[in-house]
Amino acid sequence: MNSNLSQELNWRLRVFDSLPFPTLIMARNGTVVSVNQKLLEKYNISKPQVVGKSCREIFQSLFDDPDLPCNQEACPLDKTIDEGVGHSVLKQIQRRDGSMRWEDRGFSPILDDVGNVIYVVESIRDVTRTKALENIIHDIREFLNRVVQSSTSAIVVADRGGRILLMNQAAEELFGYDFQNAASISVTDLYPRGMAREIMKKLRNDDYGGRGKLPVTQVNILTARGESIPVEMTGAIIYEGDDTEAATMGIYNDIRERLAVKKKLRDAQFQLDQSEKMASLGRLAAGVAHEINNSLIGILMKEKMEVDHPFQSSLTCILEDAEPFQTH
View 1 (cartoon, one colour):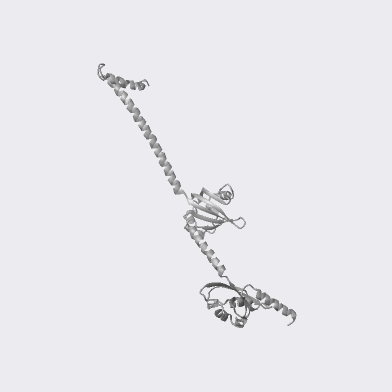
View 2 (cartoon, helix red, strand yellow):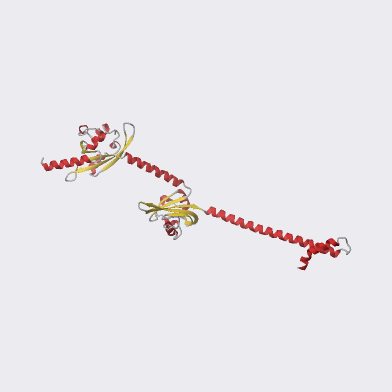
């Protein structure tokens, strides 16, 4: 072996050992021909324990993995050899202490000068922490989705282009759309002409509740049937990164029933006011009639009564009270 070839092999071995993940090289028949230092350290083994043995034997005896992926599906090693392209498999493995770990195993072909696969490199990445974070994020998303879907207020989220990204059940009932089968819905379809543009202007204006926020506002929305419905809505712009607009959100509450109740109350108040006015007029008319009747009776009695009748003095007093009516 000349010095140049020796230097190249040493350089390649150093690169192989410096890989951050446990890595092994296998022949086409699955026999391990080499492993890097990271693999030996991780599993606390020596090269003689793995080199020359089959991958199945190594994983089942040393790596706590009795349930190999090739037991249920096509072997990723064989697929890599047959197709000449890389493959990966995600595995959940139970440790000897009963805990679980996740491994992402990647298979990459090493080709000869004419493109035939001569070896396969397998890298083993422990993605337990990443998977745990994914599960946490998934659980959070599921929880938020349940919150959104259980809201009695209609909630709609659209991207910057106006394409609907989310519509909860209350929104489907209010707007009359089936979100799953309405990919062509645009946010502009939910409002009368020009209204969506006006809402966006307010959302971008600091004078309306602050930048990116729309306080409670009464607007009309349009249903899938073209019906106009009065609602109270609040809105917000969803930002990402350096204040880049990513989406918009609207929350709507149908106020038809509330407006109908207000109208009934106004009508009832008007009727009450009219009744009170009529009652006041009735009381006034009764009082006037009473005064007039008293005076008229006195006048009639005086005309019929003799001059020396003992009630003459009383009638005179009554007639004096009636003088304003007589004069008028």
